[in-house]
Image 1 (spheres, rainbow, N blue to C red):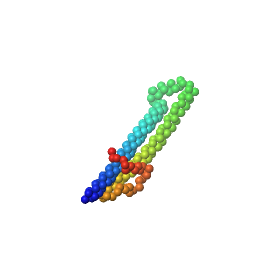
Image 2: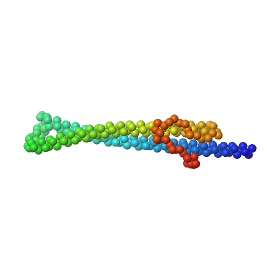
Image 3: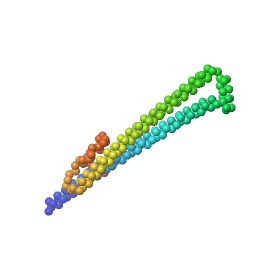
Image 4: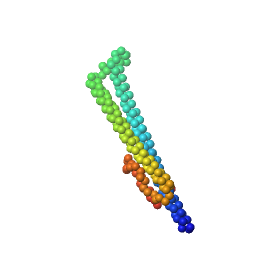
Length: 191
């Protein structure tokens, strides 16, 4: 009789250790999932901020170009009294100075147009990088959730079959194997 009680106590102790280990693994998987979720949210927020800044810069440059175009068309109109006064002032300025000023304005316009192009390309590249990052983080989060489900299934399996020893879970291979969680030390006490 004493032998049976001792055997039962050892079995209970073994099951408690298995349960503690499974709970520890589950907590580690949950912490990892939370970590990846935080990384994804941080990255997404950063990409949104950068995209808004790039859009603002592009909008400012477009506005500057529009203002330059409006000034250019304003100078062309003959019906407006202000344009006539501007033309009179321009007539007073020597041709060499006008050529220099025109060259400066054209260089500035070309610089602004190329800057606008560069920023548009940078925005497209940033958007592509954001999409790739989002996909990578989503995949990693999915892998972590699958690992958590496998751990949970292993816990339920070990609880439903007393006397069985804890084994490695036979989860489906991860889509991103570099993101596998490290094995938990069986000697580690649950926190």
